[in-house]
Length: 190
Image (cartoon, rainbow, N blue to C red):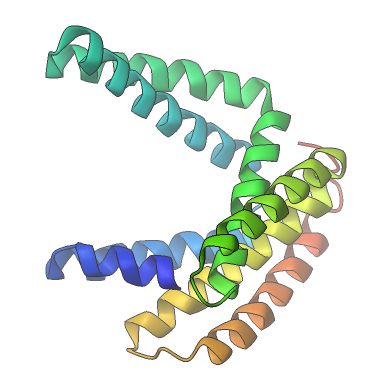
């Protein structure tokens, strides 16, 4: 919830409402359909990572915005294709990142060792996810989606109760996890 609030404070007022609605929708989709959309999320993450790196590289080498944009699109498409083909690496990164962000939402206060603890937890969850893809992706996407969507909803309502956000987020996560397990029985590995 702290991350969403920080981003909303930096956005212009007219964009913050749109960003909030989009983040709620994406978090709910992730909560209830994270495993079914695994390759999509991994590919999307690969595209944006490649596009960011390509833009930086193109801008650094050519000092030309058009070339940087072309490099961003090419690198984004290449990394998206690689992420789709080698999705277990993407599963490691995706589940690790979801665990990291979910833990950073839960842990209070913001102190220096919180980053280290969340990073270690994310790394361990990423390793577990590679071994047990279906349950790990379902649990991590359910928890992250539940906590993030409730946090964003409470932010939209102007409420800042961390306990309510955690309890309601975990309750929604539980429902999302049960929904995903019930609807993905035939999909053992993507």
